[in-house]
Image 1 (cartoon, one colour):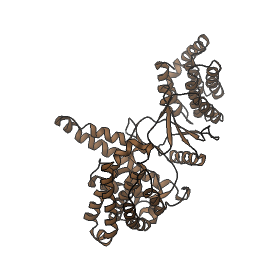
Image 2: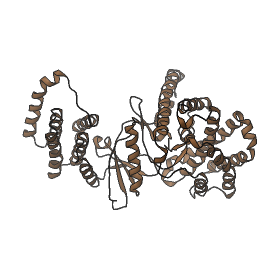
Image 3: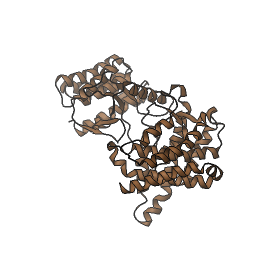
Image 4: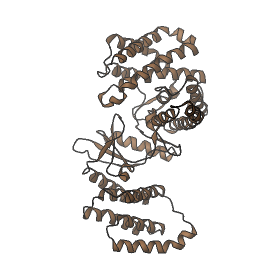
Length: 459
């Protein structure tokens, strides 16, 4: 294990390397005055204590500042090779920092060094799973430096990981912040999994952020009033950023680059109603299928709104300490109506009122009107599509969250069903003619959700 002091310095160096990637480091005149002394002291320290890995990276950085890139790379590489040679307990940390430095230099050795990191990490028993995602995502919790440096995503499909990394790179190039792709293994491990290594991004998920803001209001009446208005403003600011980022994602990602084309809703429904972990009755499945034809027809009429599916639920956004928004999970799968992502974002918790939701819809719609693909859809139809999308996403998520691997989400399924039932009320009130014309389909769907509500209450 590395000491807390070195742990902290490694984190600071890694942050500097990421910030300096492909850019020139600018320093003040005062720094240049003391720089020769600083450089000499660290060089002397490396001679006195050859196992001071931190010093080698300071020297590497110093040579980078002097534009001596080859020498900078030599110091960095020497540190990692020496750590492995003496089998240092910190060899993985040193190799990770070396790989980050090499990445910052844009060196052709970068891929080889990340491969070395991945090989070394297989010897480490300190792993921690992150979230309950469909794919296995984990970090190394051996030290604070490692835990806050890398994220590993495992999959039995190399193509899936490559397309996800390509999408992340595309978004970064279009100034939509995502976790930086670092390396993808080209050969599966003993269990048949490929690894996608990404740079760790510090922050909390949007879901945790919203829970934290809600928690601030609990307690005394004084606490409630103290935090109520600040919470509202903080939430509005963050959600505004997320909605705008979501629009940017939908707008810039080319539809022709989406791997599998349009999502087949009828086929996807068949899979969800037959999910053995959900285990609904034959009659409920029949009602879902009978009512779902309405949703399929409705979404099919708005062809221009089928864009890259972000899977925009609140666990797939990071909020940094500065309240900046970072996109996580950039899987590239299907085209789906943009309201599916808005329903994922706004429609499966109890955080937002109807007026708040439609306010965020308007922010998105105002942006969408400026894009060629969104000009022909008025706000009323957009809201109608959204509330029907809540019905769709509520059932699909309810089915997905029934798997044994997502046990912590089992209790959340009831909230999804309650949101769907509330959506029927909104559709009845705001879109009376449309509801009346399609009453038989809505009745079948509502009966299915009411069954699901009773069924989950017994679970």
